[in-house]
Length: 246
Image (cartoon, rainbow, N blue to C red; front, side, top):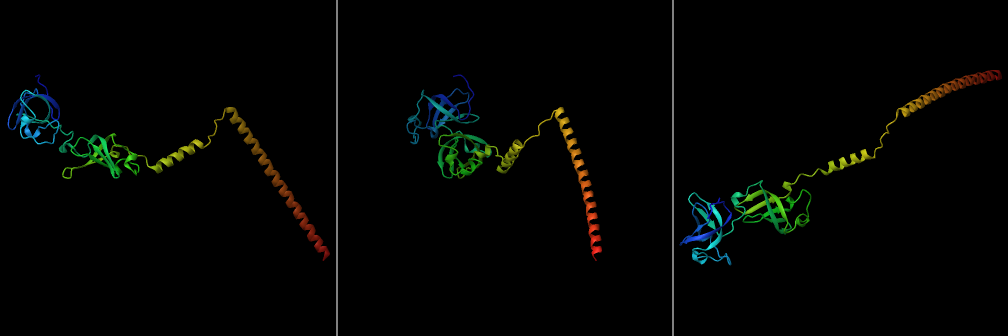
């Protein structure tokens, strides 16, 4: 078999070379010997049944698919159990994971991310907006990306967030203020640009109005003065008549 680079968690087709009490020696095309322990062998039709002998599932010359469990200096350890996409030691806070929504609850959504347990997105972590029910944002079967917030290996809990990967929305108050300002700018009438002819005409009209206003003021002052003289004359006449009467 042609030599190939062997990587953990990848699947390879191998040929059983020899069986022992502890397991089987398998050729998967690697330079190092590959070995599967009996604890990693399973029956295809019923993986939960305990195996007492490797011959129950493997025999010399048989070709089977195996996954690489671990690569050591002197050997490669195989398994017939498909490995998890994410081991507990590989899950770290702030990392981004992809997964599928597998269950909705009133308090949040469970996501299959390839780990031993599904991760939980609390309802408060589904969106920056207020969410009354997780079904408003996601549905079962949806493929999503989420950020790991917390990992508790002892409790087997993985807390995830969708909104942590989303940009913060603009505050509503700023949006409304900006909207009003823009609307006022749009509605405010603009002074039309004037041509040179229109500017000269407007200047002449302003000058004429100014002269008329000045003339009116002078005339008003003149009339006022005349009225004052008449008042004085009337007052003296009355005083004179009063004096004669006495």
